[in-house]
Length: 208
Figure 1 (spheres, rainbow, N blue to C red):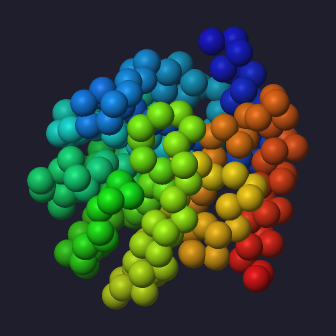
Figure 2 (tube, helix red, strand yellow):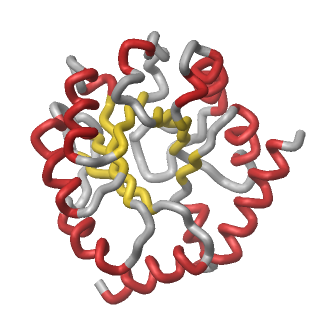
């Protein structure tokens, strides 16, 4: 816990705008995390928003818990929610921003009927198969297409999966306003330097 507290401080000092958590159930994706406890333990250490990505089947039961522990943003998977309108509304009712996540294989549907309760869309750019899965650049067209849809400019578009300084510019050019980075931030323990490089590469990408 002491090491995690230091990491949070380093992220904040380096200019992170949000901290992202993946909560996995081992069935919707072939991995499991340590659970929700870490959200509550880290919440008193920073004022940065917490973004919780629920990679699980039937996530409705856990939404009140993660919000009570300190989540400010909560995303659920379109593939895991038979009634996404109801699930997004539940997130909003708990007091968090509501997001809908899409696996790489899933086409982007017409989202107009969801905009009343939808704050952001999370596009996965890797398959959740193993820790260093390949970045899939062709998936970025979902962001471009989504922003062109009626109402698509009124939500945030986020990207997550395999983002590095070499490809973050592509994500920025596609229209991502929120970019989730994991290993590329922590590489060699140089958080400040890595984040500066990622920000510079993203800015360069939007100017091309």
